[in-house]
Image 1 (cartoon, rainbow, N blue to C red):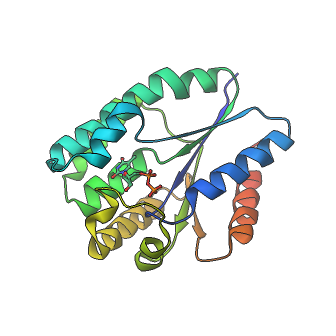
Image 2 (cartoon, helix red, strand yellow):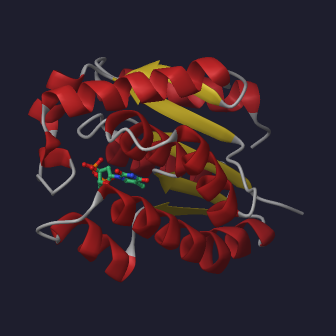
Image 3 (cartoon, helix red, strand yellow):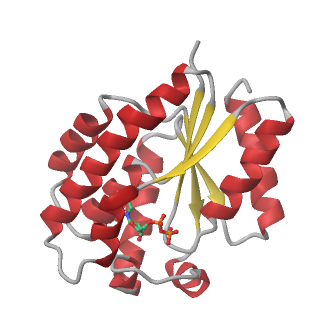
Length: 197
Ligand code: TYD
């Protein structure tokens, strides 16, 4: 038995957290035990989001350290217990933020993503696509990374869309400029089409 692993991705302010909560209620109403989680997490999250200065390489390695801990101690055990795991950001965030936007080498990122996850891939990734300016206008808190500016967030968006174009069978793109009810309906439709809940 193995649960289902769903990740939510998108630029800051795209509405992932709202969708995560609605999906959790929906899956639970269908009788599936569902856990919500996010990256980066714990003490490493504090370092990543609140450090005054952090070299790009250190940022990448801390994201991967958080991912490794999270994958081994939380995600894999939950999947082994047949739960649905909804994760707000996973390795596609690193591809888009540290790779495309910060400009770190994509082959290094691919190796580290694979190393940190032990090869675990989401069964489905929902990419909430919205233009960077709208996203930045919507976000509720600003941290060190989301403070990187509009040009940075435009590159993040491009990184995500490129990833979706490469792996359309895993990554589904949803228009996140629509009202949240419509985004939820679309997410449910895609989930039902692609997964057996
Ligand atoms: P998050 O709390 O999801 O921010 P938001 O709720 O604003 O979407 O993530 C915190 C920040 O960390 C966000 O700016 C994206 C960044 N991040 C990366 O740069 N790389 C990564 O691999 C991950 C997981 C997050």
